[in-house]
Length: 327
Image 1 (cartoon, rainbow, N blue to C red):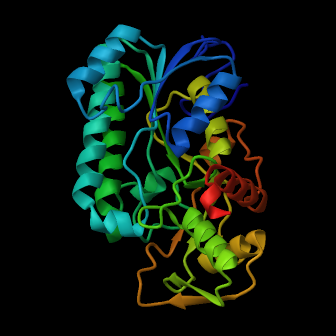
Image 2 (image 1 turned 135 degrees about the vertical axis):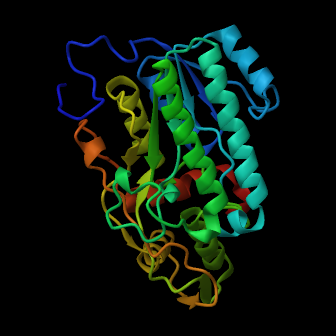
Image 3 (image 1 turned 135 degrees about the horizontal axis):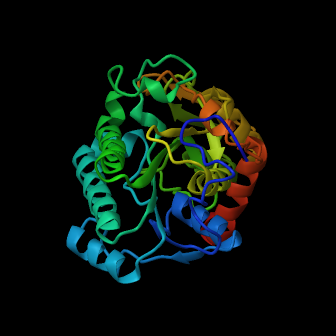
């Protein structure tokens, strides 16, 4: 594939990640990491992983020692402390410090090990709360962040800067991707720490199971959000590893959004809940809208394949199969 996109690999170039390469996926047990492992394995790469019980990625010395020992051809940094509005508001210190430590350890360790290729995964929350929509990569650092997840966003912005600094100082082939809101198999359904979509799945499932006449949700329901199935993200990651080597981050999304109210109605329909949906407007809404400009990724040939309704149905089935207590 040939494209005029800055940083894109040309057909005559040496492959950025050759077939059968050894790739260490940091955070392989999480929503994103597990999907990346599935995709890279299916694509024929040798995937390396290390569980938290054996390697705390916040420990820089141990992380560097591990990477020096296994010497992967590439690293995908999908490890992070993540959560929804409630978790971010409750534990900002951990969301800031844990993510900074993970990023510093893995990126510096990757360089120390002589690994040529790294993909750092950030988040769309890095962009200003009132950024023009759809949000282009150039909106970074042009305005105030959403206060409810500022600590997490600042950590991810620091990760982008770290990647860019290694590129500029050492010529490292390190790149960053900024995914939109993600969901799918491997998601977190704990109501205290989950993101909005899996939280809705659990809330409506339990309401249907228990015969509850209504479900009350946080906020007004008016904010708009974009959702991407994690397997589509994994496909984008594989594409970026082989085809992109630019200094600027790349947005990863589907290019379409809906209101939180519409999301709730869709989840309720998939689950079969027919009670009332009520809204507690005294609770925070978060950012009014967060739709990514995905022109840079689309120019590389990416297009998502999983519709939101199909993705929700598959995610719901996955969760129920793995948690018999929810039956």
